Amino acid sequence: MTINEPVTVVTNWMITGVSWVLAVRLWRQLKGSARVIPGRKWALALLFLGMASLFGGLHHGLDTSVRPVGLGGGDLFWQLTMLSIGLVSYLIVTGTGQAVLPEKWWPLLLIVSTVKLIAYVMLALPEGAFYLAILDYASAMVLVVLFSGIGFWQSRLRAAPWMVMGVTISFVAAGIQQSGWGLHQHFNHNDVYHTIQIFGVFCFYRGAQRFY
Image 1 (spheres, rainbow, N blue to C red):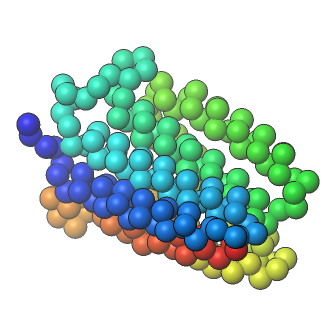
Image 2 (cartoon, rainbow, N blue to C red):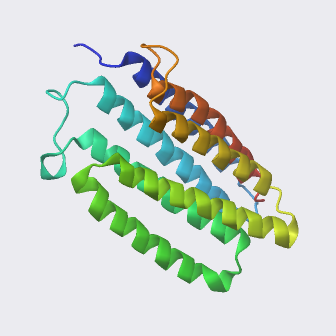
């Protein structure tokens, strides 16, 4: 069986490996934490980020003739990638929000985030358009920066600088991906994006460690 875009598959799965290792480490560090909810949500976000990269690698690597069929006759691997991205967005927004907002605001945060996730799933999965995932993820990143800023202003939240750094790296990586710029014909814009994004993932992990 021929593997398409092997470097893209490898760089995708590098994100998977790093994300899952950091997710397990973060989850184990939560014992006895006063802020277990934000930390666990970020650990789950890293888990689903790894899943998005796993399925993304399968989508890029396998020929359409051997990919399983998903909803509406679409590519199942791509739909699982899109779904995982939506779950990451939901978890990082609610996790960061619950780390800095008073508990009286949590129900509103969860309701709005859940409605946003449902709308994303209903629009993105049937269409399979990656720009919807970009818009959803970018809006989540903006909210992470906003909540981090609130936390830093209120109590000098130690997580804030790492979160802002992670978002900045993610936006730079996404900008390179959207520009189509690559280092080599065998190391394209997606490969550059994945490689840079690994550093963003580490920053998010370091930030999530500092919620508690």
